[in-house]
Structure formats: structure tokens, C-alpha cells
Image (tube, rainbow, N blue to C red; front, top):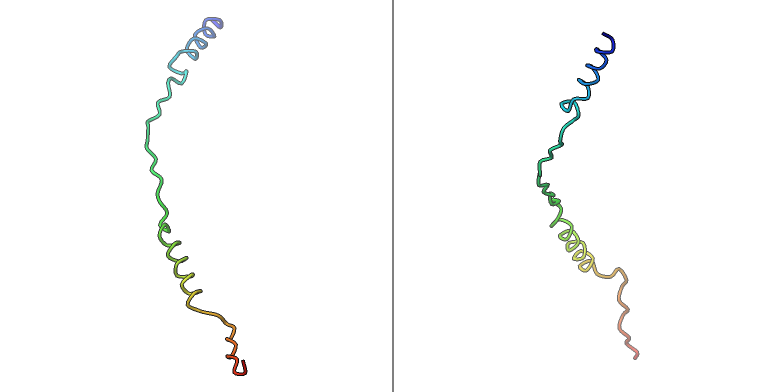
Length: 68
């Protein structure tokens, strides 16, 4: 009886129902989201360059030469 029980358990555990079966993976399209700062960084760069140009020089200009 012990041999019959062992053989039955081995046959039951080796059945294809417990083998895992095929793995089905659905094709899902992953859409990468664009960052919201796509227009913000160039805009900040233009503003920064504009401020640098508008600020001018900190050095005073030399007075014109009157004895030349």
C-alpha cells in the first residue's frame, strides 16, 4: 500500500496541471510622458541672457580726452 500511495502521489504531482503552463504576456504600449519643463528651460535661458545684456557694464567709461 505504501508503494501504491507513493506512486499515486508522484503521478499526481508530476501532472501537467501543476507544471506552470504557458506564460501569456499582453502587449502593452508604454507611452513616455514628456516633461512639463520642455518649454520652461529655454524660456528661462532667454530671460537670463536678456537680463545679462540689459544690465550693461559695471565699469565706468573713460572720460573723453580734452587735451588730445
